[in-house]
Image 1 (tube, one colour):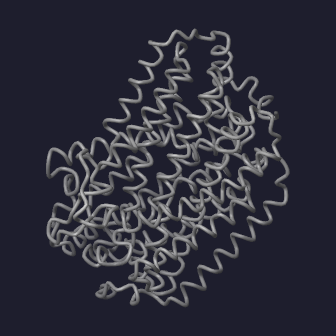
Image 2 (cartoon, helix red, strand yellow):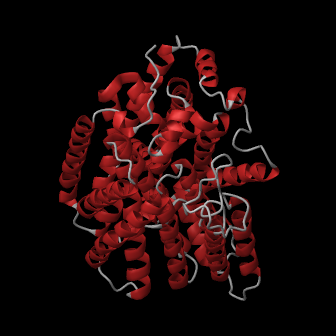
Image 3 (cartoon, rainbow, N blue to C red):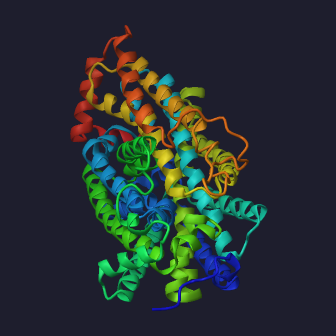
Length: 548
């Protein structure tokens, strides 16, 4: 067994020159793929949905590439390394969520819509107000998800290049944003999909190699690995293996855990960038195959995270991880350096960087598509804008979203990215899932119900986050330093006690959707609901709709 990593300074981790070279090779290779794929981007369907030419297995790999974000690799490994069992709850929640997506939305969404979630919600309701609400919700979810990815990029690259200053890390986030903008502008959904496929394969292989390497150090004895993790974590001790280290000390923290669990399990089925992926396949059968492939890949990967997290705790140590740039997000790169030195660190970190770029590109194209197709094309131009015109608007929107993501990432820098993604899941589960389920399965559901559900769920989730300890008021009990996004410990305006709003905002959105519906005098379009029901369940008429 190699000697443990003793010095937590970024400048001591790897060789910045080697890291930059490997990063440059990855970026150049993926850009080449994006440029090659973009040659056939001629129509809106090509740019938004990759021409619907991907097979189920290809799309399943791409979905896993979209879903296995920096939170899955960097954030969860760090959460397990520092909080043990409670950190692994993220893996369980993210995986179980796919069963909800498979059973309730995947095929139905694919059969009913064309490009975006709003296509489904506006199918039998008043189009303009519902499209506007769905598009605003999509932009909100994408923004929170982008925060996590940009924060992960800042911490990762800062670790590899030895950047300690906040200004230097902010510059890194800006560079990541510019690369991401280039990917989306050039490649559209087709280029983004190929990057996600390649990145997913590399990520699973890289995590698999590290998992076997860690197990080999302990003679493939998981008990020995867990014992070493406990020995290396004197502050936590045996609690590293039991529930309650992070969630369980107080009644509030237990409620926070329930809130987190609700957000993780219900959020996936409402994530717009995941739902958009179902439009890239030609048939509903391929949509089902996509989810099956994704579940297998994602499930195997999350088993890897258990070994990687405890491996980082055993070989690196929680104290070193917390002291590194990026804090808990640095656990996986530090473990790679401990296992294989500079070369493995550079390779694994490049894969993590590619992970961030691919997910950010997917989020950006989803947000820009929603604005161009739903708000500008359908609401402002009332459907009179050509597909080419929509794509032009989408490209301009990409630039705006890129700037917003950079600014948001700068504020979120240093937060655990698995935790930040959980906030995005809470917003998605609150704003999108109730309306999607009501639209697909409740005959009486109407426009007022949809608007109350979307705006109520989105607004309550964002307000509760803004006035939660996530933004202000959370401090380290030992040092008094701020653990919130606002780093000044003297600023505290939080009144909501939980970190995650899901336990309040998700049920509230369901109630508002029901209340808005039953108090409205709007009648139900029985014929339109019957058409939607037949199409969503059988796919009849779906192929004709997507060609328009």
